[in-house]
Image (cartoon, rainbow, N blue to C red):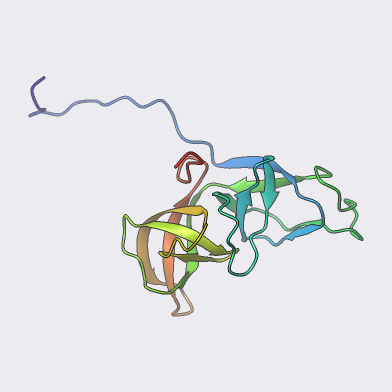
Length: 152
């Protein structure tokens, strides 16, 4: 087939969804804006400091959800829903700064890294790197179930 040399009205299948929902994991606090990964059981996970779980990032928590033992939800697996947003979000950087197009990995619930380590889950693809409104260098990462495939 020959290459295009004139305008082509390329159709698309529609927009990607902007939000999704995962069931809450037991005894977990999900602060609004934190990176959310997905467990093998399909539950939302708030990745800990220096996370080595290998769980893929699904998005960012759109509202604070408290599923700890003494909270209203009760603290059990599946006692509530965690709504996550998909899109491009700014995250802190651990180690060397990535460049656009780099695949980055989950370091914790607000930080990404280029270093896969032993088992770090995919956070997504870097769209741009720049300073936020506080002057801190951030990686702007596309995060979604599509950006973090689970079969790689």
